[in-house]
Length: 294
Image (cartoon, rainbow, N blue to C red; front, side, top):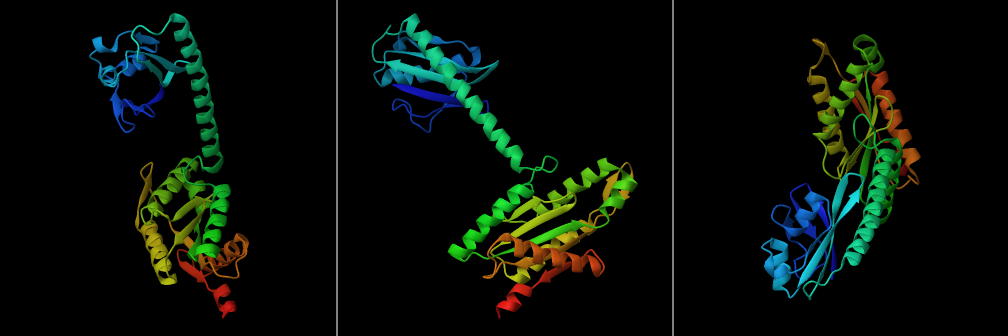
């Protein structure tokens, strides 16, 4: 019987498929056979499980196993986990079989490393590297998903575009480091007023998109007004200087005339322009599509 075990936050190893050890059981790295293979990064064999006091060996022995061996999943100098096999006879495994197991473990480790690399690349492709939130590309993909949910399940949402006021002047006066610091502050502030199923993305230099799900127009306006006020009320400091931060926000609600995300974004942008033209540091909502529908 074979099982793959991987490390979990440096605290234990999880068994995935062996009946002798429950699938939800975390094998501790300390005082365990697989933990010893993981720590030493060496293939090891236990010829007689009944003679071992290591926790996983005891569990295997009590289930009728006689011997086992464990190979580290090595990628470079990193051990990604271990590959373990067991047999009901004692002194069963040979050096040749141990070599074969290590070859299999190396192949598995290589594939795990490649998978991790692909996941990292996918994450970078859809994430803003400064703020850690979704970028414009990921926002567009998510908007299409939200539109699909609206068409099939009737789940309404609002789209808001938030733009920082006079951001170029802030950069020119305090420097780009201060500008980056303010963007991170803005993201953290907005996040504090969103629900788990809302969405925040950076879609431009100082421009952010916010998707508010399952809210009435008044609730959406209240949320955005709270965000606007929180940004205005917080005093940002850089090199001993205070940096004022305000934002203008335009928002609109999805409706049946929206066949794609373009009309939604356009309406939110028009509302944003109105907020800018009427004094900045304010929230404006665009009801144009709903009015046409009536």
